[in-house]
Length: 456
Image (cartoon, rainbow, N blue to C red; front, side, top):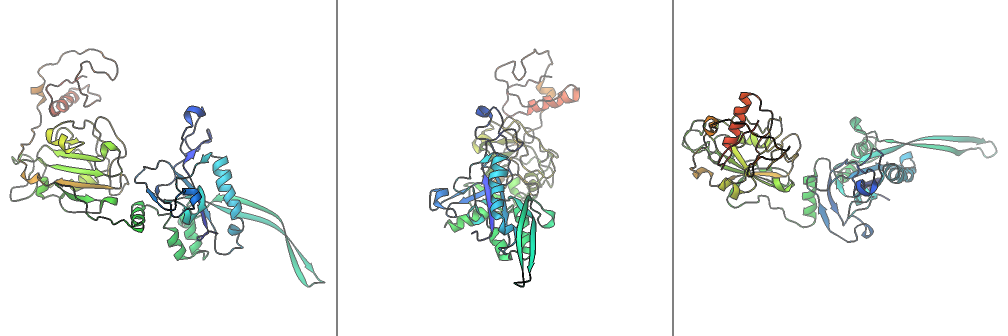
């Protein structure tokens, strides 16, 4: 029996093509190897001590899955109330067969358990996830009742039963959602609030980070509440990287060259505006785990770097890649003005640093945000030496000086350079004179260049 009267199944692979579920396709030999199911949940962690040895093959252990590191996972379950005679309880075996064997394996081709956990099991034995789909049954029965005068009693005989399988109807019209359905059981008196709270130790909603911390605590790990990086001071953190919110990115701080006894470091100030900030992202792809923001030009008065980095990555005022700042994959590159990132975009409300900026091309889904999701385990740091930097501001380039003449180029294959040693930093429609000047400005601003070539 299941302590919470709830069963959940989770699958990690799809082996059936052309059913509009998962990404398995024909031909099978090439397009259905290690294919993924339809992703409907976030796998947070697996506690192998929960499961039986036949599922995990070990008595204890755990696995954590930050961000989207687990890949697509599909979970689906069902639940029933405390009354063992209610329809959901009497036909729970039918529901298990429907969910596991028919609907998901036969109809969709979903197979493979999450390593370390059963494919299907009582909820308390299953992986820690954000959510699960849900099926409930509807029974239509035909009975015959007969009165016996000799024995002075009724007899009843169940003649026929039809069981339909439907998406669960949860509270607040939140359907096909196992947690919402369990809350309905609580509201109807078929489950208790205490059971719901235990239920929410496995299906945790958007609280994977907290669930992982709690699991680490259960396993005896002590959490360091303030990790330090030598030479840096943390100015912001979220998720597993500590919810720190110092004022070091707010207007007026000397760490961003905006404070102290000197006038605010605003445009046209002759005080060095150069400073360094770092974002660390534990769950980002390799190119975006560490990003250095190097400020190059004077800063507008009251410029709010906290808002810029955490919520609204914009290019105005005065925040244009290769003109006002550069991005680097290491502090060594930033100090030496080497390997600046060449692609950046901006101005998606609510999307913070660095939107889709990348070393050479667009890189999606590495941004952080206060309200729109994105990467959840990030921290920002300011370099402790920022207040003492005396490097001069980089002047905005004058393309009329950089470009002495315009001459015809020659045709090349799409995507190829007409010379070796040419580094593409921008592309677009540059037919007008205004756009050509913009192109030249981008080229002239590229750090460390020995010459510029703008082709339109």
